[in-house]
Each structure stands twice: as C-alpha cells, then as structure tokens.
Length: 124
Image (tube, rainbow, N blue to C red):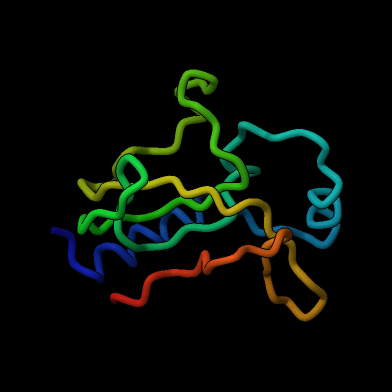
C-alpha cells in the first residue's frame, strides 16, 4: 500500500503533466468549446487522491484520481490519449465531474450544480 507521501508526490507530478497552466485567453476559449476533446490536457479537470471505485462501488484501495469533464471509452482513444492505469505501482481511477470554470476571484467551481459533493475524501 502506498504511503500518503507517495500518493501526494504522484498527484503533484500528474497535476503538472495533465493540468497545464491556463492563460486568461485559454480559459475564455475553453468556456466556448463545442465538442468533447479526447486530449487528456483538455479533458482532465483535476487530479486528487482517494479510494478507487470498481463497478460503481468504492473500495478500500488508495489511488490517485483523475477528474474528467467526460469519460470516454478506452476503445475510442489511442494509446497516447489514454490516462495511465497506474503510476509507480499506485493505481489510478477516472471520475467524471463535468467541466469546471474559474471565476474572477480565482475559485474553480463545477459548471453544473451537483446534489452531492465531488470534493476529495479527507482521509490523509
């Protein structure tokens, strides 16, 4: 089982890889995107740590989570477009949250209101 420090180090690395720094122009452009992108840099909206879900049920396996705007079936993606199933032996999970947008005060929020929380689990 990975340590909390290992999970956080991997999360930081994946965040730097899949969550590019956005300029104001890029943020405005993404608000008007009309199609779903299969490019991870455009579909991944967050990276976190938590427990893995399998067949819709939460397990006790700690993992690094990719939060995506839209989940795309593996068969529709090329190898280059696939997110890793594990990193340094630590499993990953893909969770659909929908798109986020940044407000002028710098706070990122989901575009659509959800009935429940999509925030991280406080187990670290």
